[in-house]
Length: 246
Length: 246
DNA sequence: GTGGTCACTGAGAGGGAGCTCAGAGGTTCG
DNA sequence: CGAACCTCTGAGCTCCCTCTCAGTGACCAC
Image (cartoon, rainbow over all chains, first blue to last red):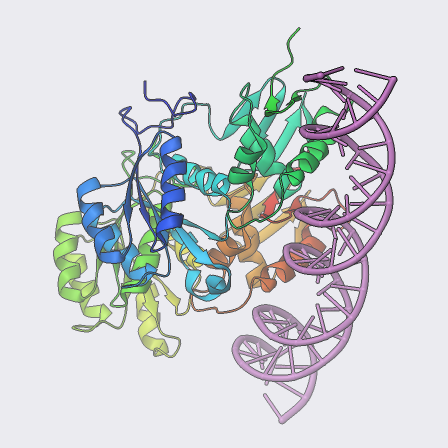
């Protein structure tokens, strides 16, 4: 079976082969980071720096999804979107936009079932959105039963943004939610503070690893409150989420 | 089963295959947006930019419905309609017209059981009209029991434009109605303000996401007034409509 | 023990997201 | 032509969320 670098089963195409994703961004550093994160998911990834290259690559790769910067050196996102749909009508598109471009030009994009993320974003968010898109488009085989994560008696419904422990609803802030999602997608694995910072916080966040401790503390108060703890500290290494064992 | 990108069951042809729709508009951006929205419904969609192309496409696709701009570069919509009826006599047509199009011509349209929408329109409206047309023409299999949406003790009769909560009638303005319809067609799913703007407001609306908050506020006063709330805010993510859980 | 490092958590500042009121402009209808 | 209604803008306000700082506690090496 096709697996991720982390050992998790990968989200695959219906025939079991890896999902194919095209990353289009003119900032090579950013493209590199994205590509890495998506490869980590076990997907097949290609990069392109402008609209023309993107189209050539798309014709070869026939990607299931495209991560597409709205601002490109040669064309604009809408034109690329149109051309992409001609190459592969059922392709999913995740747009990357600057914060100030949002309202006007993005209008209409999410209408087609596509989605967007504003810069600066966290990798966890990009991956989650992509997974959501692919799943809804029926391009991904359901490895788990739907958009629901389960670790022990802890469950997370990503679409409804609902988290429960032992059936009890837990309210989380956006950052808490994203942190817990990352933990739940990597259960029984020790995650370093650096890893967590890289995935959950946006790439331009200059802050110290100290925030991670803080948010772990918040999560514990809500998730482990008065119960057998699931979030454990591994001194000098990081944190790990484990189902309760007896 | 055939499903929409949103995960809902799709409205299908009687034999279970996807409904086939042809979009005819000379504005490529608009056509793209429409196509996306209809694909999102799980339908099979083709595009055409003028009358001649439309006819060729229609002969191949044999569409169940056509979304047809009245103003086309080569011919006018009515001529296309006549030719379409020769290709497929029972085709449903949804006309797109400018606000100032002459009244009497429109009157002629609806006489044939077809329908029209004036520009600028909202995607939610286009989709709803199309669903209505197809349902009435008996081309769509009724996946749900008729034109009635139900979430918890909240019900909406789309054709009668009647909304009730716990049996009590609720009066809504047009925009409020459309917003609630969108929420009710996506229960338990968090919808972002951008998604809501794209679907419920017309495509040329430049306004800020602030309007969504305003209309959510209006809806709450009418739908949730003095009752257990069904409309919930998910900070940093959007809004979600959920049946009351006790 | 003792010193040093790593981790946890309380308090609080600052910023931003969301809610609501009041009112202007437009449209519809009588 | 006026009244009623609807839609959207602007502004003020509140509350929540995020992060910084600082103090305390836990763990380890010697």
